[in-house]
Length: 316
Length: 96
Ligand SMILES: Cc1ncc(C[n+]2csc(CCOP(=O)(O)OP(=O)(O)O)c2C)c(N)n1
Ligand code: SF4
Ligand code: SF4
Ligand code: SF4
Ligand SMILES: [Mg+2]
Image 1 (cartoon, rainbow over the protein chains, first blue to last red):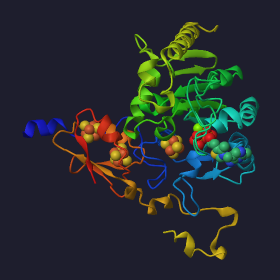
Image 2 (image 1 turned 180 degrees about the vertical axis):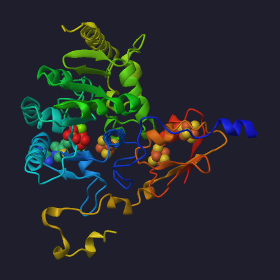
Image 3 (image 1 turned 45 degrees about the horizontal axis):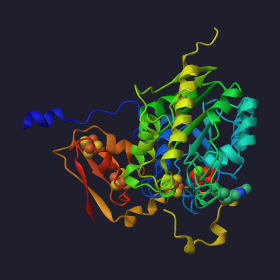
C-alpha cells in the first residue's frame, strides 16, 4: 500500500504556468474551450503583457461592468480594431521608453479576437498590423461562427456547418456552402516571421507556439481552434475530444510557418475519416453521405498539399 | 471587493469605465450554475494533471502537502470535462 502511494506523488508540471491570468468567475458557457484557449495563451506569456481584445464571447464573459476576470492590463475595443489598438499600444510604449518615461522592460503586446473579429471585420486592421511590422502577437480564438450574437456564420465557419445564417434548406441543403478562409496562409503571404495553428487539446504544442511568438522580433499570428459546445451543439464534456478529432481527421491540421518555412507539428500515420469528427455535432447533423464524401475529398486534397508544402526545404 | 452594481453611484465610476481591481469577477460564483458535480477519488488518481490543465474555469489545483487535487466548488460549472478526460477514471459526475 505504502509503496503504491509513493509512486503517485504529484510532480511539478512542465512548461505550464501555475498562475491564472483570467480568474474564475467568468461567464463562459459550461465546457467552453475558447476560454480554455485564452487561459492557456495567458499562461504561456506570463504577467508582463497588455491585451487589446475585440468584442466577442471572450470579452462579454470576462468583463460585465464593474467586474473583470483579467489579472493583466486589458482593454476592450470595438469589434474590428483589436489589431489597430495593439499596434498603437506597441508604438506608444516604444515612444515612452525612448523618452525615458517608463522603465525599459519587455512587455508582450497581445491582440485577440474571435473568428468574426479576425477573419471578417478585423481583417484589414490585422493585415495593416502585420504589414507595418508591429511586435504584437495576434491570437484568433476560432469557434467557427459569431457565437456571442447567437451563432451566425463567419468566413471561418467550415463548409457543411449550419448556423442561423447558413441554415440547411432547399437551396443550400449542405448548410454553409463555401470553404473556411485560410487565415494562416494569408498571414504567411504577408511574409510574417511566425504564424501557426493550435488547439488547447494539444496544450504543450500551444504553449510552445505562443512562447515562440513571444520571442519573434515582429508580428506573429496564432490561429486557435476553440470548440464551442453551445454553437456546435456538442455535449460540454466533449470539448477537448472534438479538438483531438479535428486535428486527427485533418480538418484542422497543426502546423507553423516560421520565416517562410512550413512545418507540420502533428502528422498522424493515417487520418481518421471526417465522419468521425462530424458525428455527434448538431451543426453537421443534416449532412448525408454524398456531402460528407465531398468534404472528405477536399480535406484529403488540402492535407496532401499541406504535407507537400511542409516537406519543401526553403532556400537558405 | 467590488460592490454590487446597484450600490455604485455615478460619482464612484472611474473615468473611461476603468476597472482598477484585477480579477474582481471572482466575487461571482459560477458554481451555482451546476447541476452535476465532479467527485474525486484520490486512490484512483495517477497525478497526471490532465484535469487541472483542461478545466476551462481553473477550478482544480494541486494540494502538494496532501498530495491530492482539490476542487473549488464555488466556481465549478459541472461541465464534466475533468471526468471525461481523466485517464484513470478517478472523477465521476454526480447529481448535485
Ligand atoms: C461593428 C459591429 N458590428 C456588430 C457587432 C455585434 N457583435 C458583437 S460580437 C459579434 C460576433 C463575434 O463573433 P466572433 O468574433 O467570432 O467571436 P465569438 O463571439 O464567436 O467568440 C458581433 C456580430 C459589433 N459589436 N460591432
Ligand atoms: S458561446 Fe461558445 S465560445 Fe461563447 S462562451 Fe459559450 S461555449 Fe464559449
Ligand atoms: S486527470 Fe484524473 S488521474 Fe489525472 S490528476 Fe486529474 S484526477 Fe488524477
Ligand atoms: S466539471 Fe468542468 S468546471 Fe467543474 S472542475 Fe470539472 S472541468 Fe472544471
Ligand atoms: Mg467566433
